[in-house]
Length: 98
Image 1: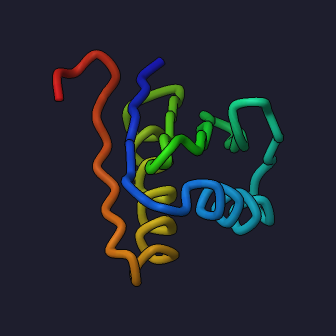
Image 2: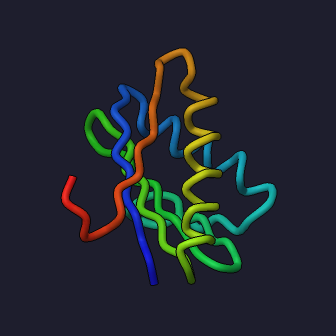
């Protein structure tokens, strides 16, 4: 199962995790976990974890095409929500050197 991770620098990681979960929760299942919201698509999932100064997004899917779709959805929405802060989402495949 392919997976990827994005670490987005922000002063408001909790706010953005909550905003993404709330917005996407109208279309997909969202589960609250101790690590943060877990978003569940039929073919994959993502966890949003707020850390000091950054939002960490971890995504996995059944195949590369579905992973790319999940990355695109999360990335587009977060960049739009954080446009005033200039948020940029860069995904790195798990196991890849960054």
